[in-house]
Amino acid sequence: MVIKFLGVDSISSASDLRGRHVLIPAEDRMPLPPHHYYLWELQGCRVVAERQGKRVEVGTVTGIQPTGGVDVLQVATPRGEVLVPLAQAICAKIDTQARTILIDPPEDLLELNA
Image (cartoon, rainbow, N blue to C red; front, side, top):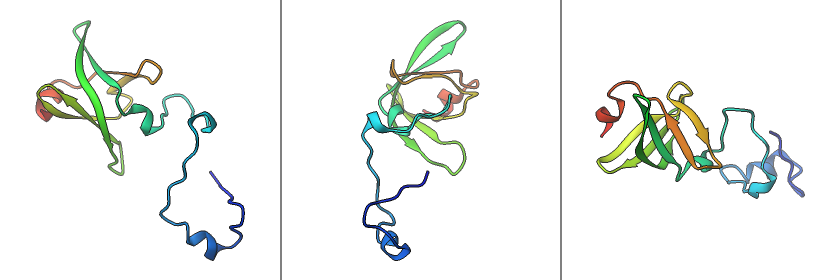
């Protein structure tokens, strides 16, 4: 994405803006391709695991940790924080409208992190 600011016409004036955040109203955000999400959309989502054909409530996303690779969801559970990789193989369905993330975690992932 390339952004041009009114009155910022040189590299030196643009470098004064380095490290700043750009805020865009949610209704003006750029649409993303399937299976891509703005990280702020995941904050506060319910996390539900599919276990033997049943859905089990895991907790709520309280943060996202960038790792340089696959980001990690920080999920608050009744037993403490659980870290869930934000990988398509684990996060089977993300519904930002319903504020729900359905996960299919590897065996013992939730127990290892708690």
